[in-house]
Length: 502
Image (cartoon, rainbow, N blue to C red):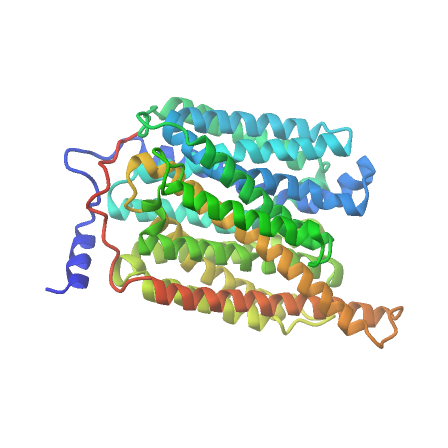
């Protein structure tokens, strides 16, 4: 019998659990609580974006400072994720989860009550800090709670769908709250999610410290946090400065050096923050790259399509959010199919590249938009196809990125997934913004820049350029995933430590 057939047979048995363990009776309730908490974190990557013009008018900050309301969150979140994941492993997932939820809610209230630009940015940074503790704890809870292969696939299809569609839902909720109430409610709304998640977590979760005998790798924590901060800050500066600016390439170079030193240190440290065994598994490595590429390409959808719908087609914030609902629906359907049917039967080597290819075709198709295009024919079918493609990629990639890790590494492996998504988003935003701006400038060269039709067409040129590059990201993702993933159904790591149930 071939290895592939053996793996398929093992998969059909549907068990990935250690001997002597039984599934937690509370596992589906735990999934619900984790999903609510994850939704709160993912929403905040986009929910404030639509409210920014209102917040700017209310607090009186400049256009140049506006990006920091978004960047402050991304910087704190991305740079502290690995540290947050390790803290969850060392001190327990329940306290990490509960502190993360409570802190995130408190920071949201502070932001909603902000009476100055500085107070709002500080609150957004604090949201990122507590989000970096909450997100890896939430994902690692799934990894250690669901041990049956089929149930784990269903759980990760839910989690992956939220991770993929949460940004679009944030745009919808942000639009509704801003139109109906006030921009401050895009922050206050987090309290509702937090109360449900905190009470549920307090009642359902039991604390277990899988890495209780290890110690916190402080040099590693400093190196990786500083390195990730520099990378994200460098790409953020690329949006507002030139790529030749020292504030751009200087931080990018510094981030690269710091992360290289961090990787070297992890091979020497007695208790590494990110053990190399987590990264060097071929399937997990491929999955981390898939999440990174997806994060970079998705911003071509959310960011520029939001601009197009509002500025060119005249959609309101609420209508813009509603326009993304079909994409979310398609993503959720294919998330369930890919994780519970396709990957368990034929493996990720065929499935994940196919998802990337579908998303790439849809992005290329989306470049056909014009100044007065009809949403139902020029945008809607493409959005549905993009959602279908991303649903095929994201949930199984996230599941495979944390599959087979020992429980003492579950938090940091989960944090690595979130880090890849955040860094990918930062890279994608910076590159696509720069390329789009250059395309608009080139189009206006030699034309009457005061003509409204010419101005409108220049924006279309910028959007379609971003869509082409997003399609390119997805094509690269398809090629990389095909080359890196092994054939057949993924094998459960026989050396992974027994799972401890919550």
